[in-house]
Image (cartoon, rainbow, N blue to C red):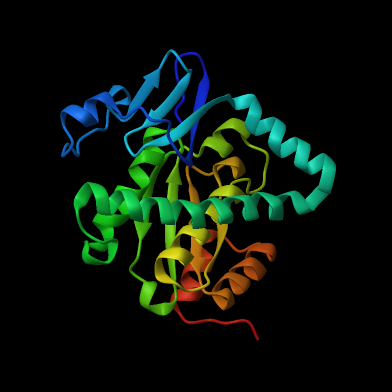
Length: 240
């Protein structure tokens, strides 16, 4: 998703593009530094289709779409809207993991398991940054203990909704859970424990096994801060 000067957003899908390969990619098939908007996207004025470097089709939508989606779900299903958004993100993450592994292998000529983990993860996320989903920071220092943290700076959802006093980035949580579950072939969950929409400077997510996520959700409901939750997990605390 990319915020343009017209206040439009671009969100990409994993659907195959039409038969019109990126012109720059045709000229420089081994180019990796395609970070500029003009390099990453390929517009087809005759059809109105926008594709990206990885041949995924992209759609334009306004920020009002995010507000309308969330408020519409809340009106239809009430508090269950958070679960719906999480499940949307989870399915997206599962499918995007498959899409990512294909284009990563095609572009870098190696399987994701042959690549450095942090390099692989940055390769996955940077197109999201280009699309406007925000910059990220991954902390894998506790991954051997069954959990890790992901920080999102300038979340598209939180930025759009503003300070509403509660976590709102459930689609991100689902996205991370779905993607990492697919990659590691293990069922993982994710919960947002700090959000820009709660007056924080960035959003923080806990990704991990079910017992870690359940514990974090309980502590969060009891009023624990993200730092409190992080310390408890690092000290090996569990629910009784």
